[in-house]
Length: 514
Image 1 (cartoon, rainbow, N blue to C red):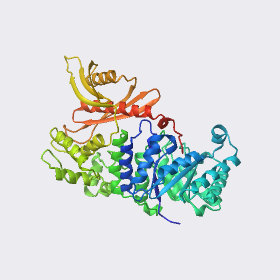
Image 2: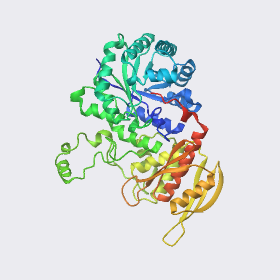
Image 3: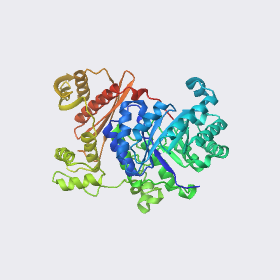
Image 4: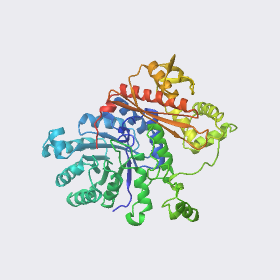
């Protein structure tokens, strides 16, 4: 059996289903380009039938990928498959990913089908997709709560119909590792033509076992792992790409499995996803968390100084976590700035470089040294924004022990200047109250957090907010050396993301597949 594991990244599809994590077209394209640089084998770019916006994003990504397979998700209906193919047909290596649930609870309560009817539906969907491409994947949604003999029967039928990859999802994160490994082994042994297809696993993290289950599935014979960056996704999230890849790399003595991932791009990719979605990586997150390579206990520090392997099972450089090679500042010129941008993996045209360089100089006047994270924030704020309804133009805050916190704000709303002022119990409250009044929003602020992007008292503050309105949830993010401005940027960004969701309600209501 081939010991190469195919890495199927679904950050742009399943990952985007994290509450509030919707991305605009520019953000999706930038992330897709980074995923290709990371070396993933398959990018699931979206669910084209779910919305016109998703269709266009998948189509755009398909045109831009040079070597990575681009997959589009579809239910078994002809209309879904037609839209999936129309979205990926221009990809160098297109894939259609068809799914239908196989558990009795889904059959009875959602699909209203018998087992025989489901097999016919699954076979018909795969055969229809096969007319467009030889690369067809089939998934048994809620596979771990399905009758294993029935799953084997379904898979044998769809492989005969032309499926080249068959996926067993733990859709609700229900399985335990030993149980999941046994399931994969059982299906391999009881599906007569399983050697004609690649077995895949797609695990959710509801019990915190997604990575463990994925590894168990791979050791039992699966050769494709469906993952997301930082483990983001529906509910408690998905299997984390970085955890699976580094587990296979670090424990090759036990697994003898490998991937094509360029591990030095893991940390930059993690950081990009965090910036785009506004979902902060928890400090104790494996591999990419801020504390993953931190040592506070004296005995640990002593050991690491003598030999890093005493308390580190991998080098931080392996995942791309290295110190800056070049520190930028206000005296840095265009050539040095352009070189740094290219080193960070951004291929920008002259107009974009000029715009970014101007913002860089403005930031350099406030900070003595500019680090990579600062530049990445500039890129995210200046180049990855969509067509925003609201834009912060001016903010002035008055506060203190004897002053009533007051905020004066100038916004551009659909291109028109609007000014306002308001009060609050503190300067940030005053700022948010004023912006909310000017925007006429009915949203509720349900989360507010602040992090420093880098060290130093002049570091940029990174603010994340979560806004909720009529069942819609949007994350907003902003960064600036002035924490009040960062907060205002985050709030405005959240309002813009809410507007995006209002215009694309199908992003919220799309099927929660796999």
